[in-house]
Length: 49
Image (cartoon, rainbow, N blue to C red; front, side):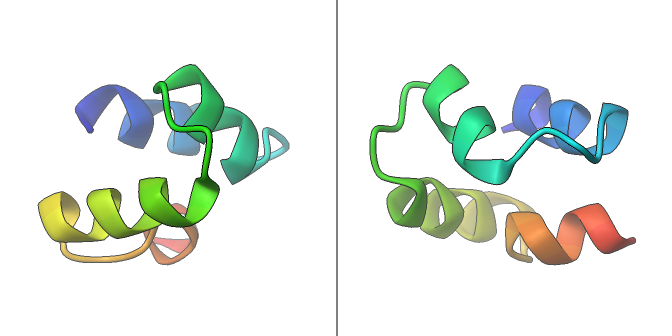
């Protein structure tokens, strides 16, 4: 998830769905759930901070 976190912060124009696909998740919802379980917040909230 650290790679995903870096991608979220590097380019705010890249959609979360695209990052999910790069991380091997076909379902963005499952990616968001997995991200939240590891990082403590959703990808969208992580990106805002």
